[in-house]
Amino acid sequence: MLWFQGGACSGNTMSFLNAEEPTVIDLITDFGLDLLWHPSLGLATGGQARELFWDCARGQRPVDIFVFEGSVMRGPDGSGRFDVFADRPMQDWVRDLAGQAQVVVAIGDCACWGGVPATAPNPTDSTGLQFHKRAPGGFLGSDFRSRGGLPVINVPGCPAHPDWITQILVALATGRAADIALDELHRPQTFFTTFTHTGCTRNQYFEYKQSTLTFGDGTRQGCLFYEFGCRGPMTHSPCNRILWNRQSSKTRAGMPCIGCTEPEFPFFDLAPGTVFQTQKVAGVIPREVPEGSGHLTYLAQAAAARAAAPKWSKKDMFVV
Ligand code: SF4
Ligand code: SF4
Image (cartoon, rainbow, N blue to C red; front, side, top):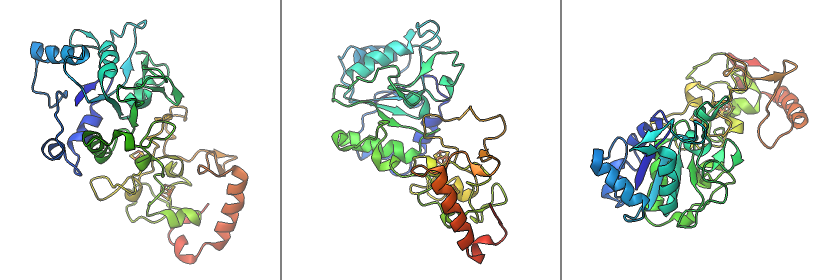
């Protein structure tokens, strides 16, 4: 496996290093992963590293898995010179290495869809490997297939959860690439079919339309959807199934999901300072209702749920 980094904050590398099931060490000792090079872990430096990269880029050294973290910076004027690495634009390394690898994996939002760097006005002309935000294409183009015949596997998140990263790498290292079913955004279905909302401990309050009153309330009472902008019902992620630090999630700790696995993240279309406020139509109806529902259905269901809300669900909370 060869891991390169483009327009990135290293958040996904930090996440990778924190993986627990399996750990990075497990990947190497138990699953036979041969880490050719990684920006934080690679042993080769200087000329030795450059030689390794060129061997891989020319196909003289096989690369089974090419991992990319960060956006591909195409600017200025398509030259890629905003991001020069080992004597050449990173975009040239990416084109060559993706063309040689059996499988290409994009880790984190920036590699998947361009992420924060690709947000307008996008001064570095950043993009993702095979998507630009939600539009197919990106740097490699929608027709790209790796030598193994696969599109880029996208593991989004800001950052991606440590175990999403290492579990996908285990599947690849053990020859199960073809078994990884992908959704329309090339995300592994095993992680991204369900929503952050799935498994949230506040679900019963969501059903009865009862909002929490306080941000950061760890008592897990009340839902964060109605006042605090929680995007859990609209965000595909397993954050309440595969817990963070093996024990919690944003919503369990009283922090709304801000939708970091979706291509539109960080939602800069929101007015400044309103990320943690539910956007409403006419001051009452949430602008975005849970995926799969419509505004009319939502209104009818909300009225019925409010009428049926039991006393326990209203304790210390207000009805919305
Ligand atoms: S806090 Fe968010 S994820 Fe949890 S139940 Fe409410 S809307 Fe769903
Ligand atoms: S809870 Fe939402 S914002 Fe937080 S990590 Fe999961 S998907 Fe991202």
